[in-house]
Image (tube, rainbow, N blue to C red; front, side, top):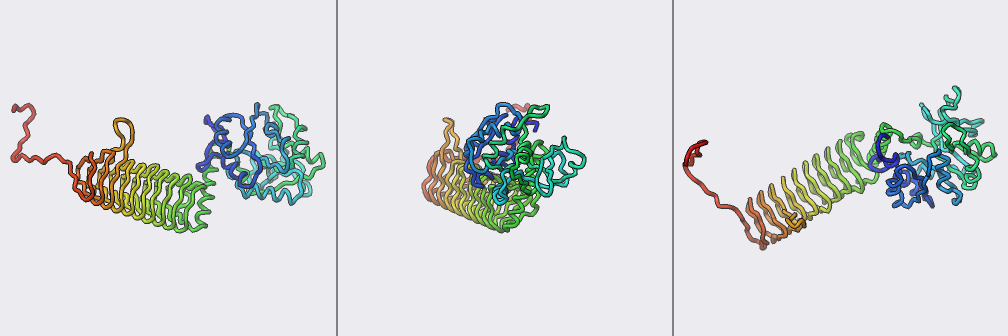
Length: 441
């Protein structure tokens, strides 16, 4: 991968590969999930242990069979599913299908296979009379064997007692001194066990070993999500240029323009419009909201019927109510913006509470960060008119229906219905002629 990160920590469409695999496994109802860790184990543990997985360390990387041994399978019972942490397109439905077919076939051990037009370096699945007989690695395959298109995905389903009886028999018969899990199949065939090959969608065989493959996996994950959104009634003007993570929820009739990036626990209501360049992370967007180009929303909400942008930002903790207007270059942080309120352009509202139907003029700033390095709250009531280029030095409150004159710096509370103006007197000097450079008074 040419990075300092463990391979399985690299993100595919916003989520680490290993997290994607674990979510699929947990969704299939696994009683216990064991993850074998080695290089970069600290980072891997930080992801998988909060998800309920138990980690086992492989002290030396001596092959796939050694990795399985490291997970102490002798303490397991029932059916064991062995997966790769770098197969990020795996889904819960895939694992459920493998388990169902494994039980229906009454197999002792099964390997998941698929057919590829270009099998490349995958191990080939050799069958006799339809029954699986061997897995032959590419480097050991004859010219005829290499013509086989059915390949080993590296995914196995096996009864625990069979796994524990055959695993100790695997030997390292190669220059690398490694123990290969593929040898399980030959040992099972030689031992007279019922061995089956479970055919799957080629998607599950996609392993990631390079940045090129990582990019392809991400492309396919976004494409899959886009297809599901289209099927549900969401309108994507250019699906291949719209990036929506799996965890995002969008109601039918919402419209997404190209270049939109939706992440995390974002939810978007019906008939909402999201224009190009918008980036939403853990955002809550109501019905009929119009997000114009270049807006950022992070861990914040905007109510139904509101519009925002272009180029506006809602930072964490902000709650915008229904039917509000947030214009270009407005930034809000930990602000509560009341129903019908307006902030047309070029304003910063931080640690603020703004009442219903209040108008915030251009260039307004809540000065929330004080010299003591603490942040203070500005409270502005309902139906307030704030003139342009006003500053509110928190903590300060403005009552309902008050008017703030343009260019004012408000440092004291303003009563309801009052006019507050803090402005230097205008001075006019008629027939004024500026002195030339060097001219004496």
